[in-house]
Length: 428
Ligand SMILES: NC(=O)c1ccc[n+]([C@@H]2O[C@H](COP(=O)([O-])OP(=O)(O)OC[C@H]3O[C@@H](n4cnc5c(N)ncnc54)[C@H](OP(=O)(O)O)[C@@H]3O)[C@@H](O)[C@H]2O)c1
Image 1 (tube, rainbow, N blue to C red):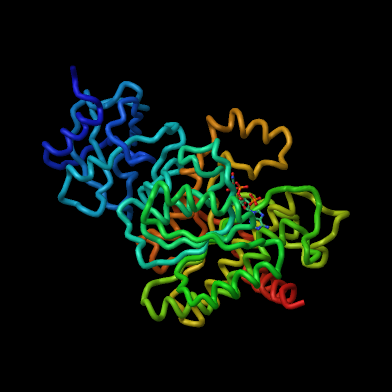
Image 2 (image 1 turned 180 degrees about the vertical axis):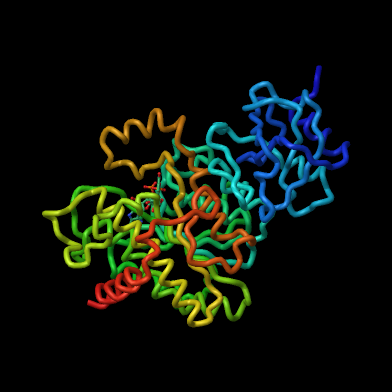
């Protein structure tokens, strides 16, 4: 019986000297860390150069033609590339971590970071030690039937799970505490050493945000990472408890207040630990499609002119402007904290619940063509944790790579105006 593809790949890596060539096979770590995976899919990257100079370390080794499984995306005669994790010299160790994830070849083009749209959260944080760090991540739900991890359909839970797997102490800001406790249980069952806590947080209520932030601050915990992830998309018009249009209130203003209230703790932590703090605003490509005027300062709560798309775009534009303005202010203060925004991709989650026909598409065909949750959570984890991004602030990311936000998102005056407007709203 011939050895399994994984075993043959392992042999190729361990027995042959490293070399480079013009084409490469890239193998992702499996979500479960299991190996071997006989029905594996191996991704083929056309050019080794696509891995990029500044990307994570890779090693190349010649690969026996037969080692490419028959269901691989593209040709043969390629060179095997694999992630060089924490132990560059111990090839066998690295091989044992190699597994395969399901993916679609057409979407897989690695950018300068060495990662692509189909990289998973585990993959982009592979080999990173997050122990000693504390993170707050907002936005969870518990839908045990959906994902590979079995934990949730939202990217917040996968973000928390993977950060915890890397040793980060994760505090979940969640409005449904029963779901929070289930997510915590699920993570700890899988990763017994995980440090995870759930604290109640309703981002659409300024009082709830204040309560969460003051309880967190008075607990005396440090805070290195804040991931502003919770969100709603395109509900019918509704006002929050504070009489603010619900998408703006939840997606943006609640996170603005949360960040504002936690900033001193983050600054203190960065100073005392000499480790860079990171604020990550989960925006969307929809930030390119706000109302014509971008932010409707004078009619933020206007039901007459309410447009679900425009209001979602407005809130996501606000997420990017917030990170940019924060960057300017943090630099002025000399604080060792970065603030970036990102688009996580189009992912099959509950976010589409208000989407009518499209929701049907997401839960059926979408499973085939959109990102899955481990892929959807990857940019959150990459921007929050990857050492390559040290000192990078005020940038917009998508698919685990630097991207360019819209011209409106780069408007400094708009960002400043939004900041002042937000201060007024939270101080009312
Ligand atoms: N999925 C995509 O294709 C996509 C694309 C671009 C951007 N994004 C962004 O990615 C982020 C995560 O979305 P997702 O796809 O993971 O959606 P999701 O599965 O719906 O998760 C969003 C989470 O936010 C929570 N949330 C909503 N309102 C809240 C509130 N007032 N207080 C506290 N938590 C609240 C929800 O909790 P409940 O379960 O309690 O409602 C939900 O668990 C969002 O900011 C979204 O805009 C997603």
